[in-house]
Image (cartoon, rainbow, N blue to C red; front, side, top):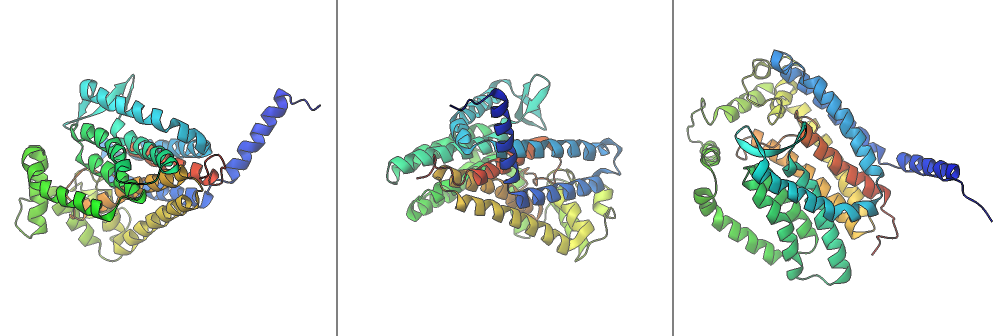
Length: 387
């Protein structure tokens, strides 16, 4: 009779982890590393003339390194563990959102952060991943045990709506919009009927005046007013509400086809654009590198997102398909909203550009999303989750 020693089990575990490590989707991971390095270069150009921001690229480099460690570790977590953790993560993050409501710290005019010892966390960002996993776990169970129907989607809507309401109160309209968008994609993929989708959209359109008048805060209404004025060609006060978008358009337009050259952007180097190292970092890319390089950057993101969707479609389990699709959609809506905001196609809603904008929370969220995608890739043939 064979006897397995502790040393033998340890050696087996090491070989198993090494095997899983080599099977990670390295094409996807290396493209993400490339995007992160590009982000560091752009961030340096956006901040090096400002002594108060000169240390931001180094801080971002440390965060980037930590994010990729988290991505790899999350990717090596067995997919059945992610399924088991989905609901605890969701309710834990929901509890943190309630904590923000009562004990949150205020920054930038919004109460979005929860101070846990020396660390400040933004639970609304974590909810993007937690809600995706909860929806994936919910549909994995419901669509496996029961046939689809309209009523099956009501709990899914609540999974999104409850945290979205708490996030909107902070206020954080951008994250609220992103949560509804990525969650809505999963509900659509779960088989929500087109006529129901059209009815929901009709109700949403009809509700716009009521939301504008009675739900939005004054500064949010001002942003919407500025956006509509610019969209319809009306004059706006470029020294007030329209300042940021006005200068963003100048930066993008002045870049032309090939740009002014790295670290040569006038708008960027003279700090004409507020938050150019965070939400408006795309203006630095466009001014210094031009339309061609900016288009190439967005095409690189499209390639990354396409690989994420390909992993989703190859998963043999409903949980894997929904988790990878939801994680991909979460990052996709970050990019979509940020680009549309910078171009003036959406109101300024404070959505960063993943792996380019300075910030730790969005970096962690992006790493977690792609970590889940990597885990789905490794567990795509897991027989315990097959339907």
